[in-house]
Image (cartoon, rainbow, N blue to C red):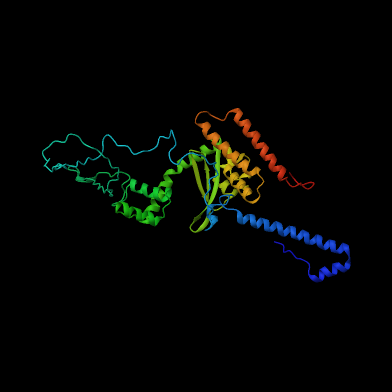
Length: 384
């Protein structure tokens, strides 16, 4: 960054003795420097004011001064909890419980006469839903060995193909280890502790890692099928990337997803080198929705910008440079989203009247924004 130098007292006096033009030139240079400094201060203040709630910055960058969570949805007057028409998940008694415990009545609660031999006229029932005591079940497989009476040679029965060690873990316990480690994102040590606490059987960290590698190999064909489907069949695919640590070094988790399918890929790079290696964006047939990260725009596909990021950007403008139109535009984007959600329940798309109304209001607010903030004029010969 180029340092800003202001005139010394001697330089000011020298300009004064040089005459009016020298003083004006000196002030012109000072005003230019002040504009440069003001621009730098504004950029720094804007940078400090940005957080994960009003920009594309990740939540991890907020540090200890995290902003209070604030939904970008409009407030409604509905009460908290289940809404009318919602099916709910109230606990209901079952017709055939797994276990029945009868509490015997031994004597009359009024006169204390014994009732041991009196038959009950009816029963009051209450059901408790709980987990049974779970412990690891050990199955011993024994293969018969027999000597042939004809040739006197020994033969042994075959074990199942999956049982290839004298002592080993079965597929269900390894599947749970992978689930806790990879889906619930528990560290290896805590996953081992969980098995010790719940089942009385701590797993070695190496066992968990090995199970994860086995599953990774098994799901490779599924991952490739998801990748091919996203490229060839989906009309809209959402892309994003976020930082994560691999062996203590910064890597990037790249996602390509729809409402039903998600493809994950980890790469050392965030930009086009990673996207090329993953191989979805370069061959995508549908539309790519993303957060305007510059690397996405390098691909010759149909693009759409993520409205969640638009809302954060509009929130930042409302906080730092309120002009009125930003709040109205944010409300309109949320209104459009809610209208689409309502329409999906009864019809394939918004009505032509709704689309026309939304487009008219959207264009009006964009026009207001451009009038209040006209784009800078391009110099002659500068590309558009």
